[in-house]
Amino acid sequence: MTDIRRVLLVASSLGSGGAERQLVEMATWWSARGVDVTLATFSAAGAEDLFVPPPAVRRVALDSGHGSVIQRLVRLTRALRALIVSARPDAVISFITENNLIALLASTGLEVRTLVSERAHPGFDTTVRPLWRTLRWLLYRRASLVIAQTKATAEWVAKHCGARVTVIPNALRTLVDAPRPRESLVLGVGRLTRQKGFDLLLRAFARLRPEFPQWRIAILGVGPELESLRALAASLQIADAVSFEGTDPAIEGWMARAGLVVQPSRFEGFPNVVLEAMGLGAAVISGDCPAGPSDLITDGRNGLLVPVDDVEGLAAAMRKLLSDRALRERLGHEARNVRAAFSQERIMSMWDSIVFAGARSAGANT
Image 1 (cartoon, rainbow, N blue to C red):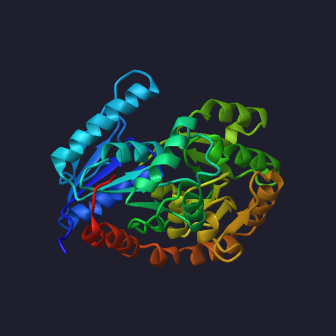
Image 2: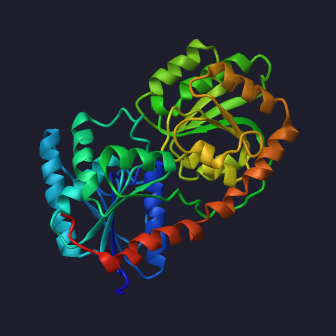
């Protein structure tokens, strides 16, 4: 068997997001172990970077320019194909639906293994355009392998796309312990979209504010719902207790001092925020959405799960934890066990087994 020595990773950008962070972590891991890593993005280098790969990783920005969706698709496909031909990677690994489809089109007919990863449950993600949904149905079966983060997503892809699928969850990056007092702070982290359910968090907190006047909310993230969330906080008369902090690469500092982390998502791919918060020993409440939170949280043992879109249920769970410091500490202590189950060593060995060992059966992406 010939070991893979060159890997090409594909992302939209290196801005905020769990997929972007995971790809940079993977690039860093492989580069440190002697793999020649190229990381291609479909945005200009530098301007939007929140996560920065090490110098040994070759960064290539493939800018699609202006034009229609079809024009951008054609330009990006051509640019990525040229990069694949010149870089001669043994494997192309892409994250997120649109990027995956461009990678599959670009590698058609080339002697390269193309591995694509779905980062949200496709059955619930309504943000994917009809064109991309059609192409996903047509092209995923051409992939050398589709990687899902949960069993539920894998089953959907296999059923609806006829693709070969395996499950690899997110790795928990190395976390630095910096013990500090937990504050009266409820933390939410994620892109400001309807998917993440921060409107539910604000409505639940408004019900609790009179009981817990010392507590406040901080929400980290950017997105299209920022102004509507600000307006909602004002209408609920809690704006003075809610701050929107934008993006911060040092998220772990917030998680280490938050008294409670709440992720009320309506759907997920795999909730990186929940994983990292648990790894840092935070008490966590998550929406019991498809897919991912129940893979991490056993309700009542290492966190709490609440029904999706249930403001009263979320408020009740928050009341339970805000009023009981000992319970928060017990759940946080149990939550730290995710460090072993989702360690980088364990998860990256799973990637190695399909990227490196898979080279023995490498063939053209037809």
